Length: 211
Image (cartoon, rainbow, N blue to C red; front, top):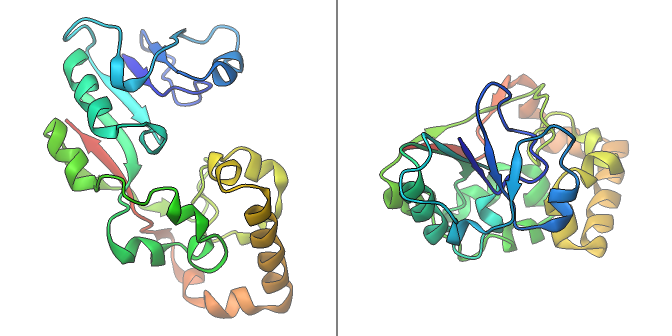
């Protein structure tokens, strides 16, 4: 299995023969002892022969790629099966799905402006698209995981584990955190998002592409 944009290896299966690809030296240096071997390369130019892997995976990474279309084509070239976890960022509906972006951190939407739609991405590799609802008690720490637990976003350790915060910059981060803290203390957040309390899972635009 090939893990493209592997980062520190958090999502690599332990029961498979995995090769990781990660262009960032900072990320590669954080991979734990015993992690799969990691090649310094970018998704757009994978240094492997055609169909040399049974499967290739990419988890929440293609928004970092310079050319997602080229990267997906490369994954399709080197692997017989491709699985990608990403976001559907098309249309204004996406901007309204998650209160953290809508009300506090609009800069997050700017990070994906002009990026290919999920349908375009799926077409490139001939993938089917599956919606991935986020349960309210999601144990993973990705950006949308705490949609029903807003207090978590006040925790700096939670924010440091998500690249979005670093990418929007400290000024936007501190403004968003300050406004959220105020709205939680006054009850404005609870009033504005009262419908969320009844949901067991939320549709926040997360998608699985399987080819």
